[in-house]
Image (cartoon, rainbow, N blue to C red):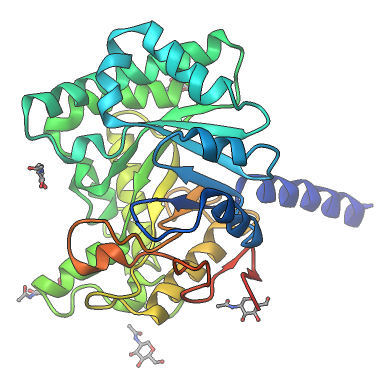
Amino acid sequence: MALVFTSFLYLIAFSGAVASNKIGINYGRLGNNLPSPARSIELLQNMNVGRVKLYDADYEILNLLSGKNIDVAITVANDEIAGIAANQRLADQWVYEHVVTHYPNTRIRFVLVGHEVFSSINTTQDLQIARDLVPAIRRVKNTLRARGIRNVKVGTPLAMDMMETTYPPSSGSFKPELLEFMVPLLKFINGTKSSFFIDVYPYFAWFQSQAMNQTSINLDFALLRTGNESYTDPLTGLVYKNLLDQMLDSVVYAMAKLGYDDVNLAISETGWPHEGGPGATRENAAEYNNNLIRKMSAGPSNGTPARPNMAIPSFIFSLYDEDQKYGPDTERHWGLLNPDGSPIYQVNITGKAIFD
Ligand SMILES: *[C@@H]1O[C@H](CO)[C@@H](O)[C@H](O)[C@H]1NC(C)=O
Ligand SMILES: *[C@@H]1O[C@H](CO)[C@@H](O)[C@H](O)[C@H]1NC(C)=O
Ligand SMILES: *[C@@H]1O[C@H](CO)[C@@H](O)[C@H](O)[C@H]1NC(C)=O
Ligand SMILES: *[C@@H]1O[C@H](CO)[C@@H](O)[C@H](O)[C@H]1NC(C)=O
Ligand SMILES: *[C@@H]1O[C@H](CO)[C@@H](O)[C@H](O)[C@H]1NC(C)=O
């Protein structure tokens, strides 16, 4: 009897984990040599990807995703935020065009409003977009509610430069000048059981530590390589076995300091470049992404030291190398696939090889 009961529980836990721990991929299209949308979706299906994130809400792509077993995150562009914040009818129109037209046949599950809006507040216009972010998010949610669409969560992806302190994780805090935006955002996310989406890159933290100090962050620790490398947070006594957990928990503690100690986390971007700079090799990129997939698709989820068992929906950056991205050489080498659709290196989504 006890045995039957235990396996029953196990089945429930396992099927729940499979449903929530699907791996996602960012489908960025800043390249002039990329496969067509139809071919790209075929490739995502061949890879067993559970979720895809778009940097827009392109009609053709959403149409092609119809009837596919893939959850979809779509994005409201930064320059659409002010209009939507000011006018419920613009929010209604956006949701009609980009959600209602495709839903539910296209499994839209997240509307992400803006992209790293707090990372480039330079002009008064940037500041206005930051101020308009939460009002725009609320309006999008209002429209979805009014249309009876309940399983589409609304959020916004933010970069780790929102943090004032990340180390030790327990002293994690947001930049003080962002608190006026962060508090209403957390109130919305907590109140609607959405997730706090972060773009989190152990690669950049490792890269910076190399630039400043040759030894401060160990490459194994940044690559999620399970070994004997660990760090104990002096305040909590929690033991960290990788840099990603440390970075995630710094956000967990920053939210808790504002009174939000139970907000879900999601990773809207993470990954490792395979070429173009120090540490950017195919071996390292394969190791990081495969370790990430193993960690994030484990059932039950292994969470982070501060939040054991928390499932963290995660999107790898990125499907392709994008040759039209600005910045250092690594920027153009985050892809899993070559422009012809062949893998740059092997990754196993849900433990199954892409191509054998
Ligand atoms: C805006 O400011 C951020 C720092 O807040 C800086 O990293 C970024 O390069 C600036 N962007 C522009 C377009 O000046
Ligand atoms: C390098 O990092 C270590 C460990 O964080 C620190 O003790 C040391 O002072 C740093 N050295 C330099 C030159 O910054
Ligand atoms: C980790 O293990 C390696 C090889 O087993 C050893 O050389 C190294 O000193 C260990 N490091 C720590 C921090 O225990
Ligand atoms: C977060 O939401 C829960 C309900 O889901 C509520 O009990 C709690 O008070 C909220 N936290 C804050 C700080 O508002
Ligand atoms: C991917 O999965 C295949 C088959 O399950 C396995 O042989 C291979 O070693 C895995 N590769 C990685 C990098 O985990």
